[in-house]
Amino acid sequence: MPRARRVLVVGIDGVRLDTLARVPTPHLDTVADSGFLAPVTVAESTPTMSGPCWATIVTGVRVTKHAVWSNDFSGHRLGVFPDFTTRLARQDGRRTYVAAAWEPLVTVADGGPVFRRPTRLTHHAPAADTPQAWEDADEATVRDAVAVLAHEDPEASFVYLGAPDETAHHLGCGTAYEESIAAADHRLGRLLTALRTRPTYADEAWTVLVVTDHGHRDEGGHGGASEAERTAWLACAGPDITAGARPLRPVRHEDVAAQVYAALDRTPDSHWTLDGTAVPTLPQAVLLDMDGTLVDTEPLWLDAAREVAAAHGHTLTDEEGAGVLGRTCADTAAYLATLSPGAAADQTLESDLEDTFLMAVEKGVRLRPGARDLLDRLADGNIPAALVSASPRRVVDAVLRTLGAEVFRTTVADGETDRSKPYPDPYLEAAARLHLPPGACLVVEDSPTGIAAAEAAGCRVAAVPSATPVDAAPGRRVLESLAHLTVF
Image (cartoon, rainbow, N blue to C red; front, side):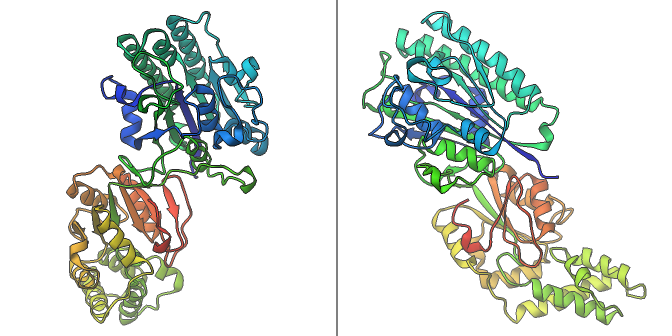
């Protein structure tokens, strides 16, 4: 059963990017390490104020469309360009949730609300305009949000923490400001724990985004065009993003809402005229299957299996042939032995399969469409590539004469790990040789057998089916060809 997709966006107001380098933020670091943390430059046309920036973040359109030009929201066009919780609730009937203390986000104060019609809402206004009152309001907000996230089932949520921004306004960007950021990170940790303790968490695929709206001047305050005020950031982790990924282009505030829709597999309607798009990223490494993925050898392998089966008294059916795709010689030999009761021992069948397949491969193999361009792009981008095959070393070396062994940092063939595909061992071995965690690697595969191995290893997968259909799933994209693998 496919895992249910869920999204949590945590907005922390007014956190300078350079401050994160000094303040311990272990929970934000967990999100960043599991995906990416990237700077965001507030667009020149956007005032560096909370209202315009948060409106851009949650609607996915720029200030010229949503028309929130200050912290007074009068004259806005949020009815035409609603926030993601409202779109998802009203147009798709999805359950959405918002928790915030700043009144214009969730009430009619100052021309609000920004979040017009989420399914569920939590609001705790601060008792006074003081740093401590804002800490208390954030604490109450998170307390309620933890209960909702742990025990209810919102599909898309937004939780706002405002104390760091207010502390900077009152006291500047000194010790108290850094302490407030550390407190916000602790609250983020409680929200993440609420997700992980959900009874249904194992059956869910969560994307988490943590974002700030703007920076601050050293003395506190914002609204100007200085680098300290105009630099924001976004951290994002989820089933479709490899650990330690690098954004392929600069990240923008308007991309946040688009990333939410992508995480929920919701294709934005063209009439929404979103300005943002999901952030394309580069993995730290790409692990590539060989047969059927980079080279068109699956027909050769199937012919070899049919030839060996026929030599031992069995005619392989189409259904039986599908069962040998992506399998090792040893696995296929054992399978053929069950189909031909009078066949030779598995070892003889395995030797026959390897010899027959190798003979066909040595006559020449064709590259799959887009294979050469993909390998060239990996080399040009200095992204490590590994070849991970269920074929014997003799076959792999024969194919490498066509692919070029120099394009791979390492190659793993059948027999070089304790178990082969569909077990995770080959992909775990390749990641270890590259000194990377499996979650930092993108696997490119064509067969269900190889995909099962990659996902068991904890890798993200780009599936390019050859002989057998493959369904999309969290952590797995399905592409028509390697030529469509333009982003990772």
